[in-house]
Length: 150
Image (cartoon, rainbow, N blue to C red; front, side):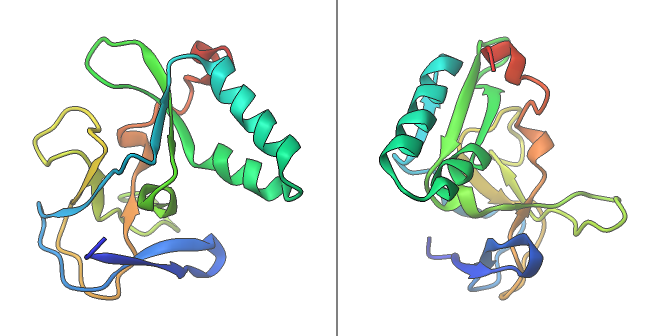
């Protein structure tokens, strides 16, 4: 992205940091062809098992699990497992008005969108050097893994 770079974000691990000032409503980055959408939970699980068997580092499998979530892609649509293997995988979580959390400054989808369209926009003005944070609850159905058979 021309707007952010990966960096070490203290206890959170990896994150994304703004490399310039970004205005509210401005596109921060677009998802690439490195975002995978799984129609079936068992297909996602098979991929994780295959990665775990093929690579000596089990951390890769754990990372891929963390980079995944469940959502519907359109109102009333079926649930899907989505896995980010691009800049989106580095977005740490922020929460508004929750003690101990930094507020989010990025959202998935245009400011007027009702769904995450895999493009990420500034939720508020972001200063150069700020960590990019998103509230996962805006697009990920955190309790919907069972709906995918997982």
